[in-house]
Length: 103
Image 1 (tube, helix red, strand yellow):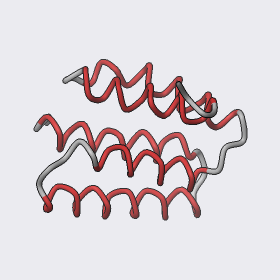
Image 2 (cartoon, helix red, strand yellow):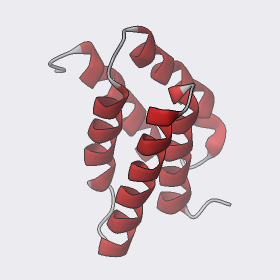
Image 3 (cartoon, rainbow, N blue to C red):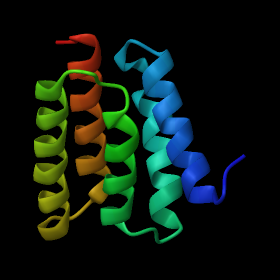
Image 4 (cartoon, one colour):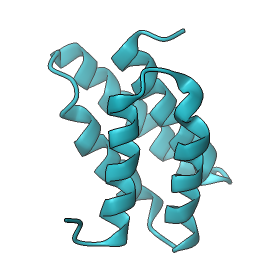
């Protein structure tokens, strides 16, 4: 049971990333990101929440360090850029690439 709509949508994104091992899920993930953004959710909070959930998927310390650095990079870019959806998508793509060794 989700405590809020925000957590439910983020859990949906993380579940899709865990179950699907290809990039075909990105359209669904983009729609979920838009759901978060149109409800005026703070981009920083979305990044932090996704990061905390994605870190649980990795066991290797190097992978976790990589994920933290990538999250920081895209979170920083989202502060000074437009279209936060692009930066959130790019972060999730990096997670997929690292998790499943996709090219």
